[in-house]
Length: 587
Ligand SMILES: Cc1ncc(C[n+]2csc(CCOP(=O)(O)OP(=O)(O)O)c2C)c(N)n1
Ligand SMILES: [Mg+2]
Picture (cartoon, rainbow, N blue to C red):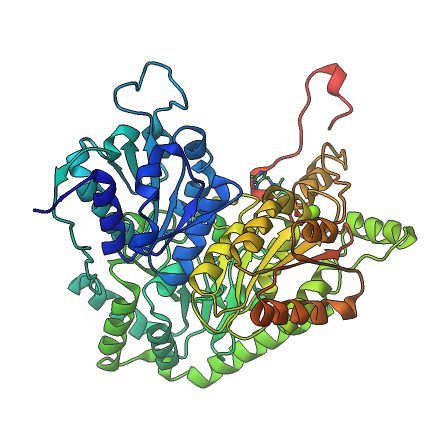
């Protein structure tokens, strides 16, 4: 076995896994390994904040389908990772988070930058490899990559900082990639039988369809059945939007057409989705989940089957292989819904047309608060645009092959109805973890993995404030992106709860911001302020041209009214109750 240092074993194992980019901030803890990154073909991309590095690794993984890697200094560098790793966990991203730790000889003595780093990540990783002895550096490193890919989620490689040094004899392990099958024979047979009997089957295409590369197979199955396909929440890139069977996303601010069609299903094929609880909440006043329908759920994680929704058949398998197998089986069966295929196609087209028309006419929100804000702002200096109109204009100006990341906020959520994609691995929303500050660093990671694709991030002004300093990473490291900031001078999404539940008693909701275009320019990027509707599309197109042709990053701040769309969590709030006299006015 070759003789090397643990630092060399780490770097050689990274190289064996094809690592070429790592996001992070340098530190003495891993300097010995960092010193030989470049000769191993690895670029360490320095970020402004470790949270940004974690999100970049997430975006990198989501667009490439491979791992993303981040690294930082023990103690504070590592605690800065926590939010990003939690987000990657819920995005099912194979991020390998390398966490050098206080030296093994001083851990527990209260030295410098000391922390027990494993508990922080215990419930937000699929595997934690603690290098228990320097001689096992390569083994644990390799396992972190294998498990991240096997289980679709982040792993932690924890390394006491003194374990980078010494002499070891080690063979570098080769990656282990395990092929998944279609699922159990019996469950596939039952599922095919249910689909064959269905008169109104509907397919929910989830993140598993994107991750397993199953869009074509899902399409073939949908076309055979003539079944409408809806995207699971925030997986708008799991089916091509131009396809006649595509009916739009479910969930918060999703497609009414998709919801109505799903509500009439007698059999639902939930392909590659855990059917997360937030993604199927009632929307637009529609409680659309078909409670009487038979549900077939396919997920590669057996623990997700039947976890949230009652199911008739659970298939533990790869979405692509399962779709192929189901289609083969159906081709040998009598399939009832082939008889009414034409009628259903008409119904799908009519629902889609009605929803598009509704969106076209839905120029602004019409609740009392929004109308008051629109009237008030008409009196102010400057002009402010209706968010829905802005989102429609952006949609129309989207370049081909675009990648879009979105943040958490009211306007970003409303964007769900206006974000349509032709290809998988194009949409990177802050998924179930729902943290503000996600979009910009994530799109930087995506752009690093796919420099030939146009990259756009959406964020509200509040969320932008949390993350905008990573524009410096774009400029310093020459990773050009285009960032849209919806500047409505408020933490809108949360303010909406104060409108609906707290009688407009606004606490800490308003934001008087400087110009984000000015700040962008100060950071070395282009900065553009848009306050006319007709400028929205051209501003995006110009910025994309600069990104793709000149390698320039642009921040486009769009001045929006303070109107607010439907709230996030009507389900999770209730009207305030006050028993104490002094609070009696706060009801
Ligand atoms: C890290 C984090 N902090 C706080 C929240 C709670 N939160 C959810 S949406 C939101 C407001 C977002 O405001 P902004 O980004 O300006 O978008 P807008 O709602 O105004 O469109 C807040 C504070 C969160 N989701 N994540
Ligand atoms: Mg805002």
